Length: 67
Image 1 (spheres, rainbow, N blue to C red):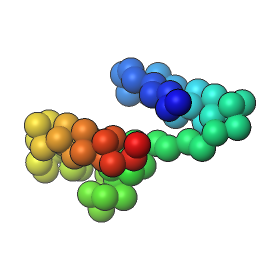
Image 2: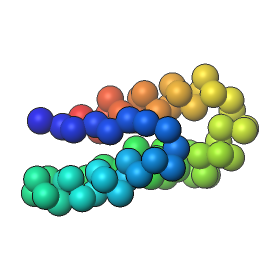
Image 3: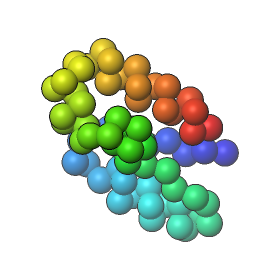
């Protein structure tokens, strides 16, 4: 069963997620890393270029795809 961590930027989701995945002997997927790879740019740049609505759609699409 997947575990999804949500929260504000800089609160340690990636750090905790990696540790949790390791302790559960599961793989770890960082959605921010997937977004940056797909977009070919950093999240702040993508957000500034395309706006929040387009960013959230990409985020949602990639989350669904990573199931």
